[in-house]
Length: 120
Length: 110
Image (cartoon, rainbow over all chains, first blue to last red; front, side, top):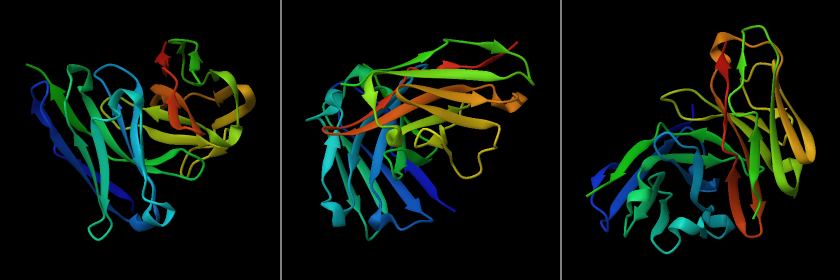
């Protein structure tokens, strides 16, 4: 059974940093592209960024609102995905979901999400 | 940049009725990269349809997807009480890499 379990959310002041983690199990993590998707309270879904598998280059891509502030990394030995968020802004407040990239650019498995609240 | 616009906004239907949800792209997109998700309150989204018309594993056959070019449709043939939720369409573009969601359609029970 595929499982994605996020951790690391919390309350942070504007300008601060936070690191989210996602523990993956039930599939071959090494071969899988992974993304983060967020959802502000009461709002829709927004893709944050993606990391390819190492065999496909291991490169990352980000949505414009977070580019230059967020980084994504992966530890294939621990089946763990991370999202490092720097220079946080109030508008980064959201539930952050760890998601598995399926074939065709869809998201076939989702974690339960972790809430990040940026407020002074 | 592709924009996905979903309609209608908040349809009110009764169990047993047919629901037709629309997703319109601002320019023609490949149906291979069009997906639909269902999200219930307090839950993570769930993949329903990928490649515009293929059902994900475990999705009941009352859910179907269709469309091409700029117009895509999610149809629920006979609404069950558990189908009242928010539905999102999503597209993937590779150059530059971008995953775009529609704003969502909230299906309400009448």
